[in-house]
Image (cartoon, rainbow, N blue to C red; front, side, top):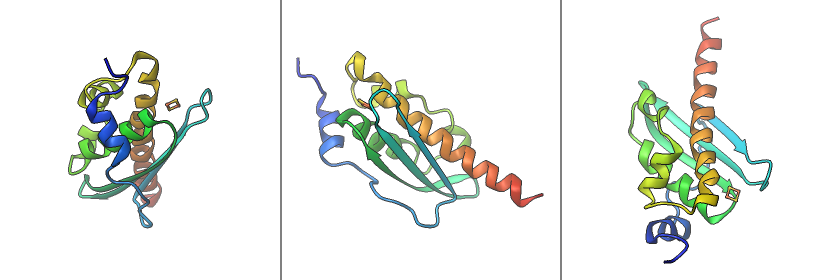
Length: 128
Ligand code: FES
């Protein structure tokens, strides 16, 4: 069996939503200390809906495919729902990742959580 599914290869070779959002409402950056890979997620939010999402990933094929798939999964979703996205769901949507590559999908989950947290913290500061 091939190491990576067709979907992983597709999202790795043609990643969706790559880039930055200059006026993002929430930005999350996470890294994995072991492999040194870094992922940054940008969210544009309106009425608690994710209107746009972009990412930059300096990492392995699985990390790039995971971020690409994760952005597709949360685009257009209410924040509450996006916050519940798990790395397992991302890996499943990619038709699986090799076991030792599951941590790469965790980066995507964490980057989204951090970006949402960043957005929420900004909102709290506004009301002070
Ligand atoms: Fe580091 Fe994949 S090996 S995120």
